[in-house]
Structure formats: structure tokens, C-alpha cells
Image 1 (cartoon, rainbow over the protein chains, first blue to last red):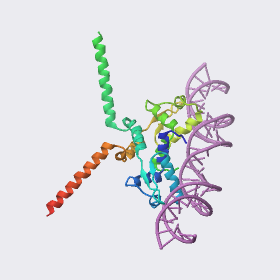
Image 2 (image 1 turned 180 degrees about the horizontal axis):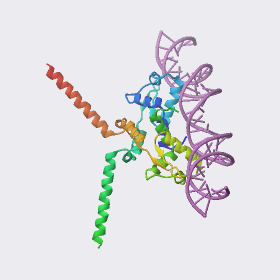
Image 3 (image 1 turned 90 degrees about the vertical axis):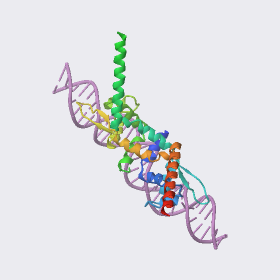
Image 4 (image 1 turned 45 degrees about the horizontal axis):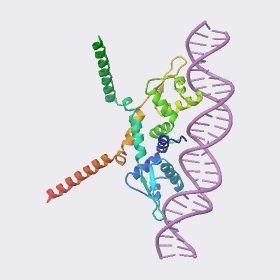
Amino acid sequence: MASDSLSATFAALADPTRRAILARLAEGPATVKDLSAPFAMSGPAVSKHLRVLERAGLIARGREAQWRPCRLEATPLKAVAEWAEGYRRFWDDSYERLDEYLRHLKQREKDEQRGEGR
Amino acid sequence: MASDSLSATFAALADPTRRAILARLAEGPATVKDLSAPFAMSGPAVSKHLRVLERAGLIARGREAQWRPCRLEATPLKAVAEWAEGYRRFWDDSYERLDEYLRHLKQREKDEQRGEGR
DNA sequence: CCTGTATTTAACTACATGGTTAATTAACCG
DNA sequence: CGGTTAATTAACCATGTAGTTAAATACAGG
């Protein structure tokens, strides 16, 4: 596994079970049992998914009697959103038009400077 | 591997070499050789990374003589950005305040309706 | 036609992942 | 104390990933 933080985050998100767990935690904290309920999967399997999410900093866990309540920790998702936004101009048409417009302005500015130079 | 599209995208992004390749392609198309240059890694290794990116729909490849020029295909990144944005309220404080404000408005609206009902 | 260049395929290694079941730890409760 | 419930650890299996080197394919050009 590539161990930089963004890679760990992406790797953790590359599994639908783990994304479903995050979606559930967006509604509030939950125990491991709660989180297991929707899945046709053993307890230990869910436990492993939670460890992956924890190591990626996407969840935090408490301790209450025999329960280990999980809660969402979304800050790594901010980095994901920002990373993806860096490519917006490649999918957003209006952004591309804006980009082209800015490029146009810049070019005109350069032309004018050249004009003044004479 | 979980084969849904979003999982494939996240899995492809979970490697710094592949993200670096995308960053390079953001500046324009490139051949496999071009893309290999920055990495201390054999040609076949890069070829495999490109196949992962291609299967995730993040790049497209052409054919020109003996070169297979790659270009960025960013639409899957739109899905990533949108997915992450769904969690913005968990990292963005001002968004939380806005959220709370909206909730407040909604509640007041409900209270007013109840008042009118009498 | 032969040679060099670009790229992929094949075969292999080492290790990570996602799942299983069985055993273990930890805490509550009668 | 003993039983039940929650959760993790251990051991195991199958598959996927990230890299290697060596061989195969495809094309350009003298």
C-alpha cells in the first residue's frame, strides 16, 4: 500500500461497504453491531473495514462499556474534494469557457503591452 | 476488486504514481515513454498503471504509428468531487452554521404554520 | 529486409485485501 | 461466579496489486 495520507484515504474509499459505513455514520455515531446490520457479512469482516477507515483517519472510536461507538471524521474528505476540484476545468464546460475567456484577456493584455512598446 | 464505477475510480486514485500521471496529462496528451520519464520504474510497470487508469475511464488512448498517446478523461473525477461534497458539512464550519441557520428557518416556518392552523 | 524504437504480454515474486470460522478478550447482569 | 453480548484477534484461503525481467508485437525508415 502507498502510505501517504491521500493514497490511504482513496484506498479506504475504494470499497462500497466502507462508503456505506461512512454514509451511515453521517447520520450519527453507531456501534459495530449497528454498522454490521445492513451487510450480509461476518462481524470480523466489518471490524476489518472499520480498522481501514480508522487508519485513514475517516472514523474515530470511543469506548462505552462493551461497545466501541464509531463516529465520522471527515477532514480527510476535504483533501479529497480539494484534490478533485483541481481537475474541475476538465469536466466543467462553463469553467472551460471562463478559462478560455481569461486566456483571451491575458493575450490581449500582452498585445497591448507590445503596442505600448513601440 | 469491487467493480462499481466509483470504487474503480477511487482504487485507481489510491496510488501516487497514477495521480502523478493524471497531473502530467492535465498539461496535455503524452506517450507512454513521456509518462515513464519521471519515475524510477520499468516500462511495463507504467503500462500496468495506465491500464488501471484506462479501465477506470480516467484516460483514453489513441494510436499513432508506434506510439499510444494518452489523454485525460476527467468525467469520473466529477463523480468523486460530488461524492465528497456530500460530506462538506462535516468539515466546513461555515457550512455547519448555514445548515443550522436553515434548520432554524425551517423550524420557524413550521411553527408559523401551526400558528396559522388555529 | 533488417534494425531500432515504442509498447504490451507473459511469467514470476512479494505482499495486501476481503472474506471466512474459531478462539479470545472485555464488560454487563442476574 | 457464570452466562450473554460486543468486539477483536488469529489462522487461513483466494484473489488482486505492484513491481521485476525477458520475450513478443507493431511500426518507421535507411
